[in-house]
Length: 318
Image 1 (cartoon, rainbow, N blue to C red):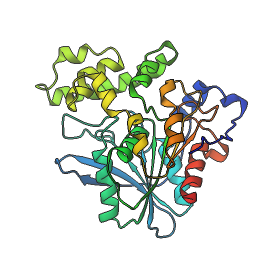
Image 2: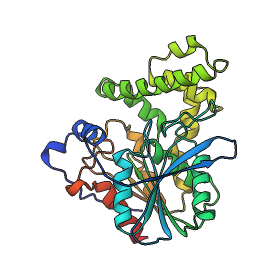
Image 3: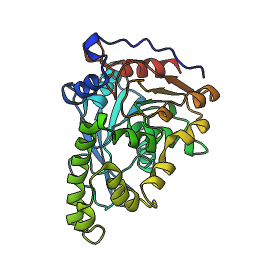
């Protein structure tokens, strides 16, 4: 598809990517009523789903995926849920394993390429909830999972009608290198602190899987992926994990209408994370690259973010 010319233009204050990213992550608030459901997965572990509903009974659902160390109450997912509910579409915010306020049962948890749990939620929505139209929307890590899910399979359920991927690090190694740069030190350290905290809890529960020496050796995000993410999930090392799970390689295979929104001033993304060639060569891919927005910081009027508005417009148009 041709590249989409973006109309996004925030106020002068939020033109800086750092400011829009921090404001959206730490200051924004969204009020929404959610109902939690726990589903049991085939391996005996569980997922917690946070549902919100439109005023009228709906056969349409948007499944929302959060980012690294996020959860189903983060404003960047509840904001979309609220907007879609107001438009007559139910929403479910999927908490990745271990992200709902309670440790998951297994040593392994979630990662950027773990599409099996998304598949379980989609099947649950179709078989147990009877939704006939399903849309997918993910932010950052969640967006990479969606793109990989859509592109790695020969087919997806016919009920899946459209997808939106926002601030997506579709080249994981490139994004990892950006996060290790001085410009992203505050974000890097915040992510690392949260990840190591949760890994300490796992180490106490599974001491045979991870030694204290290995845990204490983690000083960077790539260390974390070398010590835990790769080993716990069947990859050789961090670089093997990044290579196998980057969604960029799966974009040519996507056959579901998909909108990618990556801001040009997103400090988390490397040049490889702007898939211009892939979008031009795949009629199902729509790529929008706003000049502003930072990382998931597309601040808009009345607390409705630009990426949320575009997501609703997109699913209505397909």
